Length: 231
Image 1 (cartoon, rainbow, N blue to C red):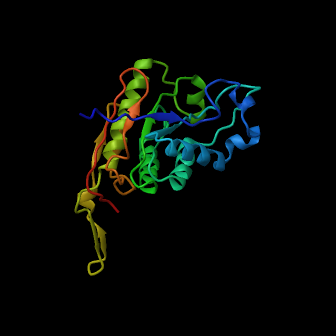
Image 2: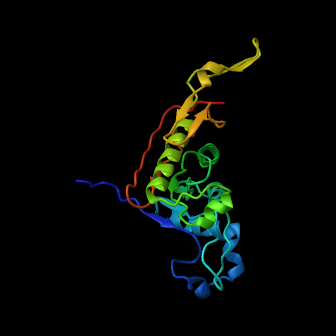
Image 3: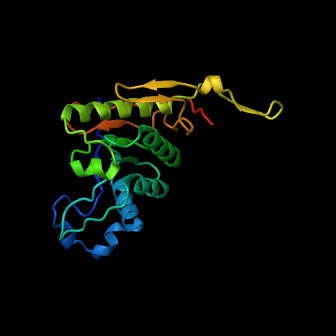
C-alpha cells in the first residue's frame, strides 16, 4: 500500500537563514547575487528531488548593514532558473499589497510559459510604511485591510489568467480579424479593485500559473489545468 507522495520545497535565497551564513560560504560574497549562483543552487535542489523552490522578494531591500542588502527581483531570478532546470517547480514571492494585479498576472503567466507549466506564486504582504512610500501608494496600516487587498489581488490575477474564451482568437486572414472582441471582454471585480478587459498574456501553460499560496494565517492553495487559449 502506497501513501501520498511527499512534496518538499526549499527557499534558495542567499546562503541560509542565519544572518551570518554568507560569511561561512565557500564562494566569495560578490557571487551571491550572480545568476550562475542561483542556477547552481536550483540545479542542486532539482537533483536532490525537491518539488519546489521559492525565491523571496519585496520592494524594500532585505536585511541591514553590515550584512548584504542587495537582491535581484524574484520573478527575474525565477525566469532564469526556469531556463536552466527542467522539472522543479518555481515559486517567486510576489506581494500584491500595492502592486497592480494586472502586471503581476502578466509576469506570472509569462513565467509559466517559460517554465512549461512549472510556475507557482507565494503571496505575501508589504507591512512596512516604507513600502507604501516606495510604491507611491496610500499606506494600508490595518492587517485585515492588507489581507483583503491580497485576496482581491489573487482573485483578479487568477481571473485575468482565464479571461480569454476558447473561441476568442480567430486569426482569420480572409477577414483580417485576429480576435473576437466580445469573446475576450470581461469585467473583473474584487472588493476594492475594478478591472475591465482581458489579460494581455495567453492563458498560462498550467491553466492557472501554478499553485498560488498565501503565507501566514488563512493560507490557501489552488491549482488547475485546462486547455491553453488566448493570443
